[in-house]
Length: 381
Image 1 (cartoon, rainbow, N blue to C red):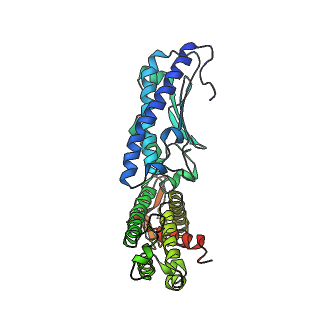
Image 2: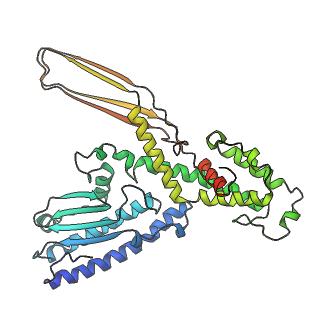
Image 3: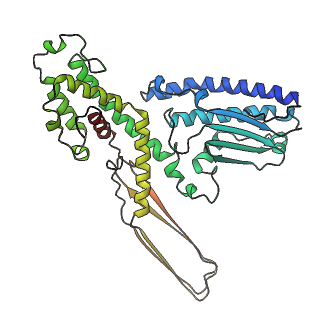
């Protein structure tokens, strides 16, 4: 870590040690909240990185600034950051995301700063002017920090990403809903596999619980028939592109059990889940860019000075999956606005096209996980 304080200021060095220790304790303390929250989503702690491992929080203080008037506020800011990181970590299910991942948070207190939050290359930078912190007791509370992130205020004002932040925000409503929907479907599928394992005396890895387990099953084709019925009833063969019955009819029970075990492993793969969320979100963006809404505004008048017109277009979007598993069908919207008047001063037309999600995308993760399992076992090309 580069030294953010003056090396000639022992008070700064001492406080940096206190800040570092407080950070480690605060992050460690919030791990329990993260673990409990994700356990309720049936995500084991073994799959979740600790907050200390995932994030680094640092402090940069301008040289020759009196430290005593702002110690309390700095620690308050640190606590707010830790609460935000806790919620962020829960939101991404304790995993890395492919874009807008958060690695570092740096708190800067200087004399010549603007009060702002910016984000670049995985670092969230919180800048607070010294006089505001010292005189006004000002820092960025947890709820305000969360609002800044959710509303995209940490991005440059004219950044094109800011316009679609609702789509790319890793903890935004769209992606959070997609993750929640997928987790419910995954848990249901895993439960079905576990029930088959119990019924046919199999372990979690698909191996027999004892050597003569297969012999104890009076119907040796029972596992195959039950597995085929289960898979055909829960995945979309038209998306898979194969007939499961034809693919599996010549496989023995050992191979079927192996397939179920690999399938279960793939269902629990949070990295692939995040990849699917990413694919679904960007497929949605492509479809919205292509959607057939037409907005036509015409103004009539002798002098165009002074009317402000705002038109909101709601686009209903439904259904999706991992390129071949994502189907997004926006509805057509034709908007025609006509304004008449003798005096229309400085006409401003503000037209917003915004998606209106009911259930957002439906992502068929089960089928993608099964396709991956079939390919891993070389049962399909």
